Image (tube, rainbow, N blue to C red; front, side, top):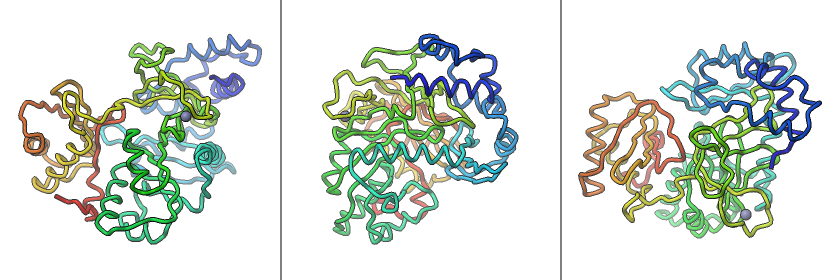
Length: 407
Ligand SMILES: [Zn+2]
């Protein structure tokens, strides 16, 4: 459901401060009826990362534009944040991954981040009450998580973690017969996880496993309930699903691109921003008390089409072989999307090795792992993956020697 008053304020602000919207949003928004506001909103052209990167200055408030454009020109580490005091206001610049290895930079005020964090904590606290000081972000690249012993010794109430790292921790716990007594909540963030996987991890770790879906640009978009359904965080975002012609999808079950409008962000507003993730509205009603719409991210199956093999496990095997046996490890990330019964897109980011060597190594590893040679892999370099992929692996953890299941 659209919060009309919030949309109106966001649009008025964007019109006055952000060049791209100056000519698009009507001048006297406050004189419009609710229907007219909804109509004006629907006329705003959706944007995506590429549009914004083409000319940041059009998409950022004039107060912070110069500073942001300056930062966009320098190579910054993905996942990094920089705080900066400008005109008595504290801004935080966040760097996320972008195509061709160029980071994408976004900016938020400290207050905007506070409001986003508050929305996220309220979603978590719907499941279980946790104090922020008892939570640990295992996804932070500079965190000492790689030292799993430390993580376990510190006995947190909550971990924010992605599936790859969680799997590593699980293997460690299995090998060392470790039990975590205090852990109450494991929150999957930043990777695709199935409902079945969530229940399986719950059983193993004996705590609640939740799924947080969001992006660096807008933070929280949806959060799972006790039934593992992703409810849209309707107090802080308005979500639309758009088809390939950018028409709004209303019906349940039809897949479209998750397109998000933040009610909170003003300095760098995200209005009808296409995340690139694919989802559909769940046809059945969730039986929990949360009445907000439920989306299902796609692919919501982790079996390889036409087989009963779990893509996660098998592609993990392929990538580990590539790294361990063929010694090809100088890439940042590989993600795989199935495009047909026997065809896959392999998206490689941050590739610093010979592409032919990587491709032949990957093909050989896949042949061994799948025991078949009719799978075709199409390699793309430096591209963003559309949708939550079947599987991604970063050699980052391997380099630190922390994978207990190296072969
Ligand atoms: Zn629910």
